[in-house]
Amino acid sequence: MMKNKTLRILSLLLTAVFICGAFSACGGKQKEPSRSVSGLAVIHEPEFGGVYLKMTIDEFNAEGFEYGDSVNVSFSNGYKMDDLPYYNGYYTLTGDPLLIAYPGYDYIKAAINNGDDLWTVAGLSETDTADITVAEQGKYAEIQNARDIHYEDDRTLFPSDEVFANFRNITVGNIKEGVVYRSASPCDNQHNRATYVDALISDAGVKCILDLADNDEKIKGYISKDGFACPYFLSLYEAGDVIPLALNMNYGSDEFRSKVASGLAEMAEKDGPYLIHCTEGKDRTGFVCMLIEALAGASYQEIVDDYMITYDNYYKITWESDQERYDVIVRSVLVPMIRSMAGDDSLDLREADLSVYAEAFLKDAGMSSEQVEALKAKLVG
Figure 1 (cartoon, rainbow, N blue to C red):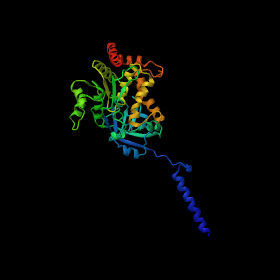
Figure 2: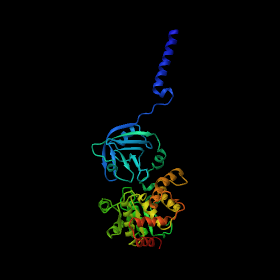
Figure 3: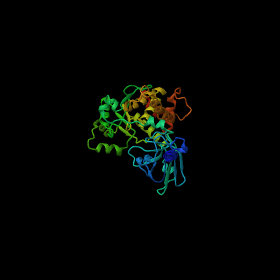
Figure 4: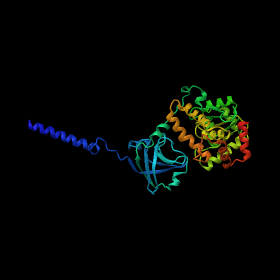
């Protein structure tokens, strides 16, 4: 009897020892994994100026990294980047670095969002490697959750062709009705929207297109594809009434600004109605439309309301349906655009006369006073 009792006590003690080993200091909290990887080969990604770190997204996440974490990246040449947000999209402000696992990428990538080429900034070579460790778990989870949104490319899931194509007439500020439209691409059909946009701009009588996404080579590639079915766009392109700018999204760069200014100056030399588009009609289109809206006397709130129609069209995000996400998008996407245009981070955007800053932006970017006045005349009459 005593022997059995002794065996039971020993069994309980062994169980306790096992539990204490599994939990930190017997305190009931499981020990955090180190969550680090080292010795990753680096690959230059020159189109947008990033650095691929040779580990697939699935492999990296299997090491315990989670979207919204803060991470430290150290390169073997001594260059370090601390407290980077790890996202599955380009959710940082323009000019801010991040570690990104963008869907479709072969590997995770470190980059400066819409900024300078990290490969050059860090002074990297093909022989360098990278180490990554978690700095703080979930530090950027709020932005990750708010920005991790996706839309469908199936027309039947949308209430109208206009909503599906993200197509609308801009009438904020003093812009005349029927003068400027914005939309997804009328030529790049990767999201199945081009043919719908083409029909809509035909109905609207658009005479000139400011294409922010493409150059002539890309446009000719779309046209040569089997199944290209955008005849109205083609007629404008062949007539020389499509202005291709091939913008990136580094709206703080001199190149971006000068391209926008030259494109708007050329647009003002042609008759409207006008269409402004990029691929989705969201960010590059958002910036340029914000700029001309401000030039035409739109208030901060009018600009916000127009920009956020895109998020209603694509994602059904409105102030009423999802106030938290709505606010994060305005705060982290649109407001930095307006501040970049104004060039003053301390400006009270709600009270400012944004037309003054829009005009200064265009002149600083290369437009003459006469060209700015010609653009305003085309917009407001």
